[in-house]
Image (cartoon, rainbow, N blue to C red; front, side):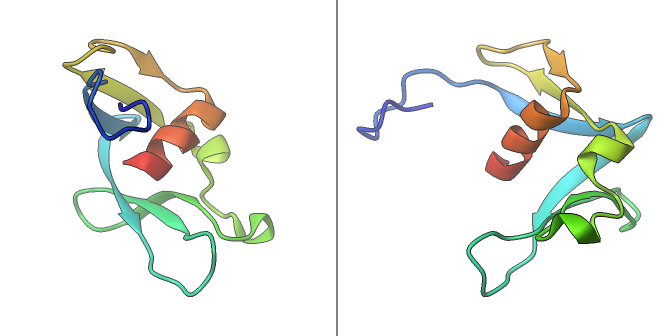
Length: 94
């Protein structure tokens, strides 16, 4: 994390996402809009969770699926969170 000047102050760690026992990876879908839909896909390529462009279209939203974020290494080593707003923020930055 930097303080706006581009110099790194702290490293928060590697971020991993899980849905139950499934490991998830983050993909952003390119679109010509201001906000991009974010998809969370398992190792087999199946969509498991998302942050949709429009809330009315949320079929697998993070709130419904209960995705958990884990940190390994760095300042937040060993911590985990399943609070949807926090998981969304980390997912958008991943």
